[in-house]
Amino acid sequence: MIRPTLRHILNIATRYLEKRSIDSPRITAEILLSCLLKKDRKYLYLNYQMPIDKKLLKKYWSLLKRRAKGEPVAYITGKKEFWSLELDVSPDVLIPRPETEILVEHAISILKEVERPFILDIGTGSGAIAIALAKEIKDAFIWATDISEGALKIAGKNAKRHNVEDRIYFLKGDLFNAIKDKNRKFHLIISNPPYVSEREYEELPKEIRDWEPKIALFGGEDGLSIIRRLVRDSLPFLYQGGYLLIEISPQQVNKVKRIIEETGQFDSIEPIRDYSGRFRAINACKKL
Image 1 (cartoon, rainbow, N blue to C red):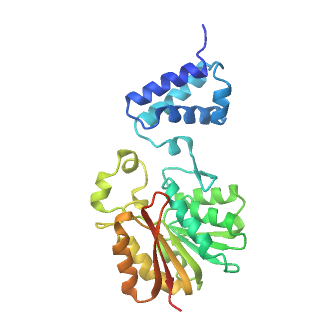
Image 2 (tube, one colour):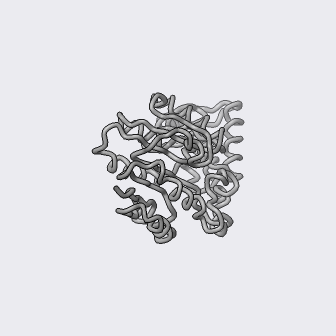
Image 3 (spheres, rainbow, N blue to C red):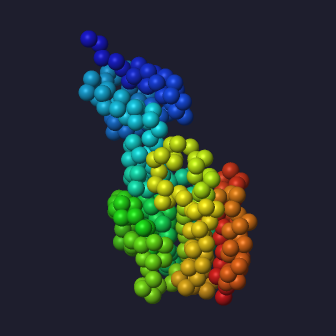
C-alpha cells in the first residue's frame, strides 16, 4: 500500500478545515503538521513528496479535529510567538496578541534614560511583556504578578527558557495584593488587564470565549472594573515621575483617560495607537 505524501495530506487537511469555516485553513494545516513533525514550515515545502506513516497520520487528524472544534492553534501546539520570542502557552493564560507588543515598544522608549529601572507587570499571564522587557532592557529588574498559579508556572518556565529568570520576580496575588507588604516602588507599572465588558464578552468569537481564560478577559459590566483598581491602587507603588502604562480597548480611551484624570495625581496622559492606527494603550506619568 502506498503511503500518502505530505502534499496529499496537507491538501486534504486544508479542505477539511475550510469546510468547517476555520480561518487560514492552509496555514493552519501546515502549522499543525510542522508541530507534529517538530520541523518548521519550510521543511514541509522541501519535502512535499515525503510519505507519512499511519501512526503519525492518526496523531495529525486528532490535532485537526481539535482545531475544527474551535480550539486555538496556540493551545494545540502549546506555543505562541511574541516580540520574536517563542513562548509556551496553555489554557491557563491568555494567548499573547501582536497588538500588545505596542506596550513593550512604548515601555522601552519611556525607560531609555532610566538607569536600572524597576518594572512591575500586573497580570503577567504567560510572562510575555515581562520577558520581552527583560530581554530588551538588560539592567531592568522586573516584578510580575498574577492571580493564577497555573499562569505563574507557565511564565516561570518561559522566563527560564529565555534566560531572564534571575531578573524577573514572580508573585501570586490579585493585582497589587501580591506586593502590598514589599515596600517597593517602580519606575514603570505596566499591564494588559481584563477589559472586555459584559456585552462584549457575550459577543466574542467562540474561539476566544470558549477557550481562553475568562479571568484574563472579563473586566466587569462596563469592562473598566480592573482598570479603575489599577489606576487607583498604582499610586503608592509608583515613584514620582514614574509611569503607568495600560492596554485598553479602542472604545475605552476617553473613559480611561477620565479615570486617570480624576485621581489628580497624573499628568502627561497619552493615548497610544497600535500598528493599525487604533488606540490600544494609555500612558500616564505620576506628578513630581
